[in-house]
Every structure is written in C-alpha cells, then in structure tokens.
Image 1 (cartoon, each protein chain N blue to C red):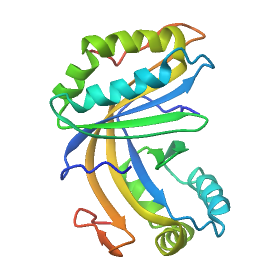
Image 2 (image 1 turned 120 degrees about the vertical axis):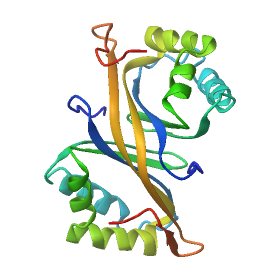
Image 3 (image 1 turned 90 degrees about the horizontal axis):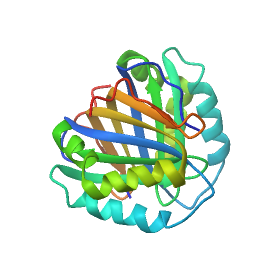
Length: 117
Length: 117
C-alpha cells in the first residue's frame, strides 16, 4: 500500500531491520503496533515490506508526534522485546519529507506539482 | 541489508511502488539500476524490500546528487519503461535525514549518540 500523505513538509521514520529466526509472537505484535500507531496524534500513514531486510516507513505530522510514539508505554515494551528476541540489528532514521510526487497508471498523469526537477 | 550511511544530515529518496503483473525484464533492470546508482556521485547506499508494495530507499549526500541521478540517461529510460510496463502506481519522496541511530545484537549496545529521545 502507498500511504496517502498530505502536502510536504511532514516527517517520517525509516526503520530498517534484520530479524532473528525467533518468531515468539512477532507477527501479532507487529500488527498490533501498526494498529496502535495509527491511533496516535500526528500519524499520517505507514508503508512496510520485508525480504532480506524489513523496511517500515511511518509518516508523521511533526517531530513531537514521533517522539511521543517512541515513548508510548506499549511501544516501549515491544521495542525492548525487539532487542531481546526479534531483531539481529536495526537502524532508525528520522527524516523530513521535503518534496513528493506520485503517479498512477489508471490516470497516466503524474501528480507532480511539487516536482521541480 | 542495512545501509551504512555517514553521520546526518544526508538525504534519501523513498520510492514506494505497486507492480503490474508484467515482468518483461523488470528484475534485470532493477538490479542494473541499483548497480548504476551505486556508481553515481553522492551515492551513500540503498535498502530495498517488496511484498504487497515495494519500498526502495536510496541515500545521497545532497539534493544535487539526487537530481543528477534522476536525470541520468539510462535511468530516464528505465523510469519511462516503469510507467509503460512495470508499475501500476508509485510515490517518490525526497527527504532529509536529520537523525539516526542503530543497534546490533552482537554488541548489545545501541549506537545512539544522535538519539536524544
């Protein structure tokens, strides 16, 4: 799914991870965290895929919303279990989305009013 | 793979896409584009995964490098074929990485000197 986000600027968290081979409730917690994130103030959407590495990009209205979600009680428990059990390594990047554009085959028109290149 | 990127700030392109069911050389071109991107000035690394959606995040030293790669002759041909054949939809986001931190199970230490939260 491609997240339907508002006009830039907005913020995102790029979370790239390598899993261990231990499941132990990983999928259930991952789904629950996505549902819980979607209920937080400032949440704009999420995109996620996993092959060798997993990439989850969550979109947020501002840095305060990102900080608040990072410190959410249930999320803190999941983060700790991630380090204890599920993840071999991860990298988190906090980014500001400065520009975006999209294209859909249906319309064959690039919605690129922000695209100056 | 988790891209080994330098200290922020740096830039990234988040490219999220939905494929058609037409292969027609997609994998070969995708691999070649990743190789070609890695040879461009300002290239820092890439992370990629596909399930329902594909997410490719490429990292760059600055906006000029991103613009130059977007306009690379072979890349322009691939972009056009992407719209003609391979993609049902895509969204491209140009972002500035403001902060990052990483964790590895091997060391059990979070390298979070940039992590003030």
